[in-house]
Image 1 (cartoon, rainbow, N blue to C red):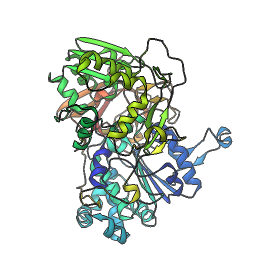
Image 2 (image 1 turned 135 degrees about the horizontal axis):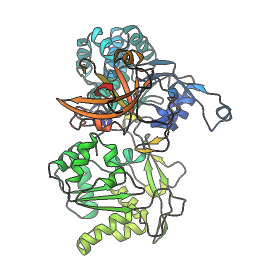
Image 3 (image 1 turned 30 degrees about the vertical axis):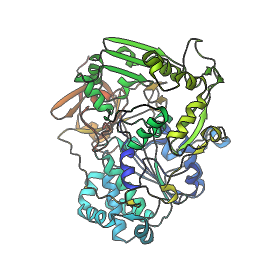
Image 4 (image 1 turned 45 degrees about the vertical axis):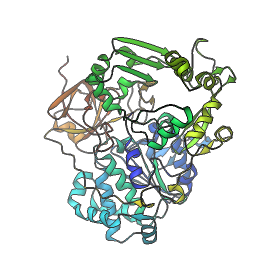
Length: 565
């Protein structure tokens, strides 16, 4: 799977690749920074947490290219007021940063904090290192650069910095709007620099909060699903199951596509998901899949990935998480991990679509038994018969899961240990690290726009439930491009025109035809389109530095009147 940029940046600065806040920390925060996300589509439960924070007196600052309705106000459908149409205002400050300009804005905040000496000296001297190198790096960035790249006037950045400088309990939240950019890792590190200057990690109501989506994203890293798994994890696997584990690194998503394209991967085996629609460069991904000898999809429903296959293709239908999973010892439950590091149980209540459906666990076990037979030292049949036995294995392999079966049965589950949340930093020096990063500048050429992909309210990842986007006032259409009014006029266009989009990268052009122009409140030279319709424009080789995450939130495109009649 692809690294998320937070998974790379955070270990380099605080020692672990996860957030440090609990859900109830939001109500204790003085200042909440929300960058690169729309909680209405990314994490609806966060809206409730933000509502509670606002009512408790927190200042909320939204930093996002689009003025998202969900960040301006929230109608809570679980409250009578919300059902009657009354909303809670959320963002006190809304800064419409240019696409790709978040790091510049953050460096401006740091520059002003340093100039005003708004530094928690006790925290910095006791719990951090690298402060002077960070200071030198920030001083190298000019205000002219910062304003140009961010698109935010210096006065507004300094006003934000003044708010930061008056706050001791700050939570910083971000999502794919930050992680899917060229300078994503550096941006996140500069965001952490802001928190470290104010001592806003390791105390209630303060810390980092990467919003990482559904439980698969958060939990798979905890369970060791990583193409560069740690030696400690591999050694624990070997001890638990009496097997020899290869040490050769695997592939991330982008490298997997390249390897299939180059013939280095012969079998593609997918557990859930819609690989073709979720990955960048749709045409390149499709061509790569077709070069394999075998594609296998373990799925709960059909999707586009089932239509683009290797020489031989298998679809293995399986139970969904909402369906009853009956095994030899009775009905089973699985566990999930949310963005706050809470592990909780999830048990299906619906009757399976077919009595012949197997669980994902049973499919893996049957494949292993069919392949390895008696040679395997892993008790596959026993593990499938009772998922408690799997959790027992996890408890012995993964730190933090002591008493797993007992604790996960308690209402609400349990929090995984989090050293930075307790003021401890598992880095080489035992301290949190300031990082010095040069200001990343992304250039557009004449006539180009910076495009970011977004989701609608009625969409979960690649699954689209409806054609409306109520947050943005769009109905019955998904092939739309949201553009600034001046950009529309400069191209001789008007709202409602149909245009063709062309992506530009490394001398290559990618095309996506027939998009309807929508005039929208988005910064000049920026635009937005829906995912996955414009994944075809995201270059396979355009990835974030160090994390290798596809840059779906910064694609250089040109727009022209459609040639289709």
